[in-house]
Amino acid sequence: MKEYPLNIHRYADRQTMGERAARDIADTIRARLSQQPEVRMIFAAAPSQAETLATLRQMSDIDWSRVTAFHMDEYLGLTPSASQRFGQWLTQHIFGHLHFKAVNLLTPEEGSQACIERYTQLLNEAPIDIAVMGIGVNGHLAFNDPPVADFGDTCVVKVVELDNTCRQQQVDDQCFSALNEVPTSALTLTIPCLLSAAEIFCVVPGAAKREAVYQTLHGPISTRWPSSVLRTHAACSLYLDADSLPEG
Image (cartoon, rainbow, N blue to C red; front, side, top):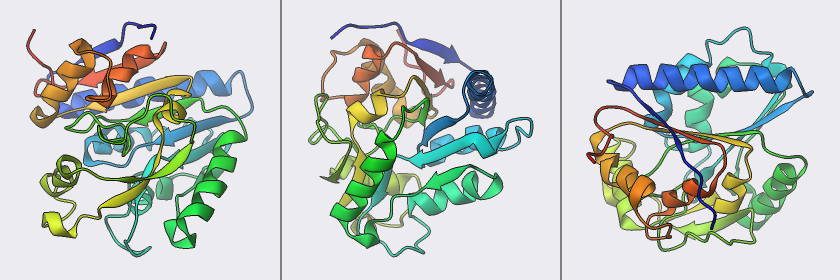
């Protein structure tokens, strides 16, 4: 795999990091809208993205009516109204605040295979311009945990089993009160789908992510740490705070 240098941005605190990432994302949206009729974006749903999205939704000079939004993953087995649903989280943090051209949600209650087929068709209608994402404590991208991550995946969207490290992160992030409440399976966009975005903005705060960031930057490119594959993307920017920045 060809490696590219990641564009690394380091900030003293989480808030500054999120605000800077949002400004850079906004600049990219504006630049693309000046050259093309529409921008297509994929968003991650996680507490690590909160500061970035809170700043981004204040960018009133962006013509959001020309932006089509997708999200990366969704639990199986939760009711549509469950607060832990990622579609709900993104609606609360950005989708419900702005007038997008379209917001395309993963809705597994329609049936997993039907949802996969519908979402795959929507994603394949045109190229993805921007992906805004984080990195899990086990290096996952979306719900591509080490046991299921596939850098050569031929699927666009698939059902995956979640490993316990990923599920425990949801408890540690205070999304669930106990491990047995966290679903064991989910729908996720695959790694090739995520990497198809022309530009990636990866926002990773917190000490819990330090080892994953280290492996992303310095470890072998391997599904042992799926985020290491970001080094094969030609336009990936990584935003870190003082807690997530590894030594060395």
